[in-house]
Image (cartoon, rainbow, N blue to C red):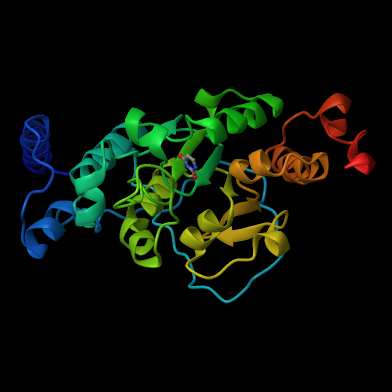
Length: 290
Ligand code: URA
């Protein structure tokens, strides 16, 4: 991305931040202007290169293949600095006003957080109130449970990458609280950001947290009770669908927790992580009681 384009983007973002700090919640802009700001500059797509030669174990074979558009991931640009590429993408997302209602209602664009070199990436639905307020995904109650899952896997939050299908909180006009599911249009509009995140990070495994994550990634309907636990292919990257942590918060059953945990054990196996006997046994003993 050219320095001139980056400067223009930075200046636009600063201008918009200044307006927001003065209480301006909506900036009129033509569709063309908004689209050209959020589009990568000409020439960027031409910088294709051969896939990385880094040797990694073959990904697991996808276990189901319901009809869905074929996902093609752009190979990494030679010498691409992942951190910098993510920062540039974040700047684009921060300036995005493609969903004017969401842009007007949001406190923050919740881009994503974690290690740009992560082997494991979690994808959730959309920011809730806590995430919108703090600008970071999964920092509320569901996020605390996700942190526990990550820790139980023997990882730290900083070692993985966490993002959502939608980068803005779905607005709930006329309501003071509560969340709503993103619409298919909102998910499709925001999809290029998630796709680029996956392309830049190139995790070895993606965990899709819940039905919306699956529907956002694969652009088709998903019945998570049927699909969880079975890898699906996302442009060469295995995606493990599992239940959303919020589901576990509402269904405090050891049986359901074990299902998610079994999905994580499979992920750990795929990543070649060491698994202790204790880890293998989590949520097993009390399973028959719930
Ligand atoms: N739920 C999500 O799907 N994402 C978040 O960031 C928080 C809650």
